[in-house]
Each structure stands twice: as structure tokens, then as C-alpha cells.
Length: 149
Image: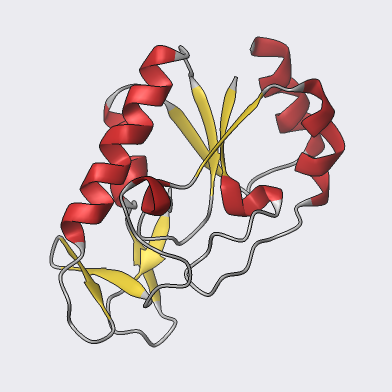
């Protein structure tokens, strides 16, 4: 199985109630090798929800509410799924405070990005999971990953 952010499979779970239609993922979803998760939903947050960004190690909403505990719970729940299903690879949402793998928003809510990882990605990488984002996804990479699971 490959762990996939639910929003990348078109599920309406993003903070604004939307999802994405990543054609390449949809093309191969019939193989039933994707395990769809949304750490923020697993952590107990609703859809829609207030935008949040990582600021000084905490996840805060645009109004300053500390929602770090929801993000940590979601990450821990995802890790349980990963361990139970022996998942080694993930394709997660770029820039997300949960799922970003290389860049995250800088905490100013001004669309600026900085080097960093989301809460879930950081936990998964520390456990040896290789995390890609949809921005890095090519058909060649996806076929390679599918051949390994």
C-alpha cells in the first residue's frame, strides 16, 4: 500500500471543504494499492476548518488558536495505520501543516513558504517512511512505487 493524502484523491477534506483531482493518482486507483488518509480529520478537526500554519513548532489558526494537539493526534493515528499495513511510501499534500514534505507555509498566512515538514510527515520520516508530494509525482515514480508494494 501507498499512503495518499485523501484530498489528492478528490475527497472534500481540505480546510476549505475542497479536494484535488490528481489525474495520475485517479488513473491508478483501480489497483487498490492506495491507503487514503487525512491526518487533520483523524485528529478531530472538522471540514471546513480555519486555516492553520506552523509557527515556532506549534500549529496555530489564523486567529491564533493552538490546534497542535489535533495535528499530533492525527499524525499518531496515521503512524498506527502505517505500521499496521507495513506502508513504506507516502504521497502527501505539499505545503500542508500536516503533510508538507519539503516546504510549509511560514506562519504569516501570507502564502510564503519555508523549508520544513508538516507534523505527520515529520513523524513518518522519522519512522523510515519515504514521503513524496504531488508536486514531485511523475508517472515513472508512481509506477516504480506501485511495483514495490
